[in-house]
Structure formats: C-alpha cells, structure tokens
Length: 449
Image (cartoon, rainbow, N blue to C red; front, side, top):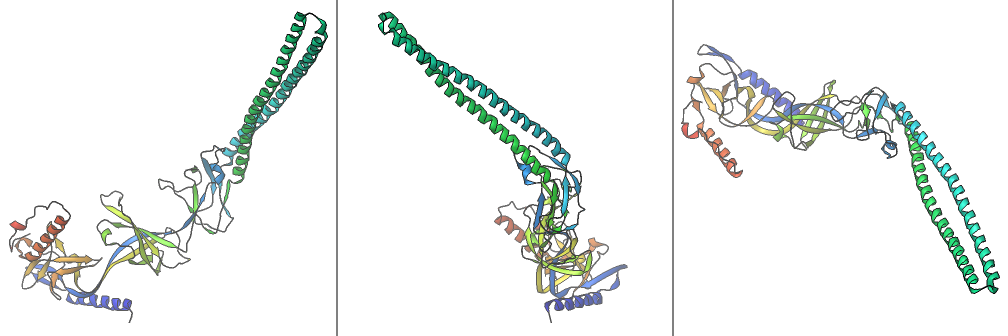
C-alpha cells in the first residue's frame, strides 16, 4: 500500500473517530459540542493561492538601433499590437511602432545631410579658387626672382652701390617667394583640417539618416521565436497596450514565456513564513481545471516582506517550481498551493477551533466530571488541526465551543505555563534581549486567567 493511500485511510479513520466522539449534551442547561483528542500521523500544510508564470521568458523589445547615439529619439508610441494570449510562430507579426515620429525626424535629418553636402561642395570650390590664386602668386614670385637675378648679373660693371642694391632686391624677392611657398603649405594644411571636420560632420549626418532608415524598417516588430504573447508591464505594474509610450530605458513590448518551465508565484503571511523552506514539497491544483493535480517544490523565499493592500499585515513572496508541463496551462492561471511544511507519524492533535487563548497562554476546555481549563503546550498546525505536545492524553474529551460562566471554571496545568515562561526567558537571554515582566510570580495554582 502506498504512502498516499495510507494517509487517505488515516484521514477517513480520523473523521470517523471525530464524528463518533462528537456529541451533544447538556451541561448546566447549555448545549455543549465536544470531540476527542486524537493520535496518529498528521501532515502540516499551508494553503495559499498563486498565479502561474513562466520561469524563463524572452522579451520582445524596441529595435536595437534606437539606442544609437545618432538617432536621438527618446520615446516612441505603440500604434498596433496583437491580442494578448495570441500564439505566434517565429517571424510572425507582433506590433507596430509609430512611423510618423520617425518620418518627421528622418525628414529633418535628410535636410541636415543636404546642408552638410552643400557646405562641402562650396568649401571645395572656395579652396580651389583660393589655392589657384596662391599658386599664381608663387609663379609671379618666381618670375620676380629670375628678373632680379638678371638685373644683378647686368650690374656687374656698375658702381658698388648699384650692385649692392641689386643684391638687396634679389634677396627681398627670394624671401617673398619663400614666404609665399610656406604660406601655401600652411594654408593647404588649414583647409585640409577644415575639410576633414566638414567631412566628419557629413558622415555623422549620413549615418544618422542610415540609422533612421534602419529604424523605420524595424518599426514592424516580429516574433524571434514561437510562443504565446504576453503584454509587458511598466514599473508601476500597468500593462503595455496600444498608445503606450516606450523609451530605451523601458523598452519591453511583450514577452514570450517558455510554457515548459512554469512556476507558481504566491504570497505567505508573516505568521507562517518561518515554516516555509526551499525544497519543501507542494501539491498544486488549477482553478480552471479542477481535475488536474500537479506537484512541485519551493524554489525561493523572499527575505523582505511587503504590505498587503489595505492591511497592516505583511506577506512574503514564495516561488514554487511546477514539475512537468501541460499544454492546457496558461500564464496567470490561478493555482491552489498546498505546501507541506511537516509530516509526523504519531502525534496527539485536536481541532484548531478547540484551542482558546488569553494574552499569556493557550488552553482547552477539558470535560471530565466537570469542565476545567487545561493549559496546553502546542506544536505545528495545519488548516484543521493543531499538534499537542503537553497537557492532554489520547481519547480525552474537549469542548469545541466556549461554555457559559467561564469565570467559575478552574484552570490546571500551571507547570506547563511556567515551563513556557522559562523557555521564553532562556531564548531572550540568548538573544541578549530584555526580559519582559510577566505575571508568573503573581499567578498561583488554581488562579483564573
């Protein structure tokens, strides 16, 4: 017989014992509902509701070219989008982005490129004219030098002063020629530098036009692989839709989840979170398919809680890996998660509604010859039952409903209460926390609580 069948039989036996021992009688003129203390195997489970999601998803984002520094388009609108939940194959249509914005930017970029091209052409003409004039000046300077050389040669028979003047005139025109040659070289380097800057500007503007043309062609978004389309959410949790504005910093349009690897994302209240450990077994049910039962395990537990809406309590996110896959399962389906936090072979346990408490202790109403308050030391609990460590014995009868005239009922089990106080004191001493003032010294055996 399998372990599961054993637990089923034990559960049936427990229910039979429960209803057998549950009875109605009269005590001091009031109706009393009782049950017996049970003993046997018990599983401690925590039930939560979760939501299916893919463990791995592929994001469909804005075209990569939009990140180019030349583009300078910082936001773009979605003008069309396939319906969420559509199953697409690789290469099929997903969405269309706003062409109008890119058309306007592209028109302005083309005008800038034409202006840059015109500036280069004008600069080339101006350079040719300027350099042509400068070269003519150098040719004339060469002629002047040759002419002065002839004058100097002819003055050989003249007076020394005439010869000296001819030499000085030759030196002057040679210096002028040398200066014109150096000036031409410097001017050529200067014009080359200016032309290079114009060419760089022209290349940048041409690249911007090319990038905008690539972006324009990429505004029709297609699926990179097969999958089911799910709309992305922005940082506020709002789903992307037609009309949504995306930016390079918020670039996800849709996701394509891998439905072969699913997780159930759930939240556990702060009271129970200490019981949740990675690797614990989980049984999952699907609200949409009540006949389906899945298995899984806890894969992660959040370290930081978050407040519940319109509540002071906090919850912790828990991710549960779902074993296997099923084509009927879809993202965002609601799951019921039974997390097994403990399994005991032989324990005393009672219905949780039979446990009552004050600020200082927990107790049950034990029915013997008369009804008394029995202080109990409790262990783990599940949705229906609570384990009893001390204070009760198998088969004892306890009340499920608080009786009348509770002030006249005697309390027993103060030794259990004192043990609990001592344990609390030891824990606080280990943690170096101040010990709270308790009522232990003022309570005596038989006092009411």
